[in-house]
Length: 203
Image (cartoon, rainbow, N blue to C red; front, side):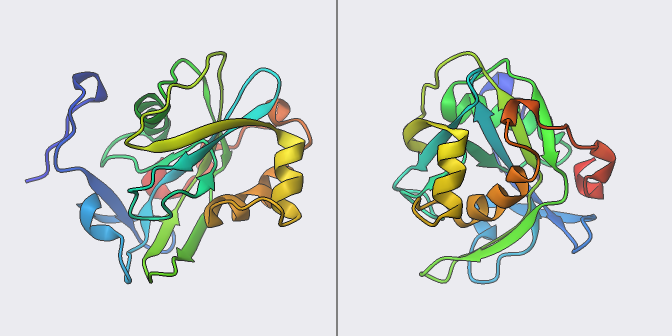
């Protein structure tokens, strides 16, 4: 039987992810430890981009023992909502756990983003993955179990590096950046997305 506890209790057991169909309806759950492999089912996730008040984005290098894309630089924080957990709450939970960050407002940016990526090892990542922005006023305190390194970078420098192919970055981040650039030059002034556009499992 699936069991999970609130983050305030600092304990989560039997963590499951939400499985979805191609249009985003929830069709069940599966243990997180079992879903990533050569035949990864489509499941619900999120990506978040943390900015400071100067408009710099916080990049993270994934820990070296991660199953998927170890040691790869990526956007600030990614994760999976627990069954029944609102995604903004999941963003807050994972930012606290991975980077020691709290207090920033969680804004929806890309409600319908999804992607599929394959590692050289054959492991597949396949996610329906809404994208969020969080603006913070404090420094990160990375959890070494999740994050190997962090770096603040000016948004324009980051996007120029990704779009120009000069900056190695995770495949999902590489796909997200062109969509984010379309929102405008100032990441602090981007329009907030409509939650009604989220896939049904994420509403």
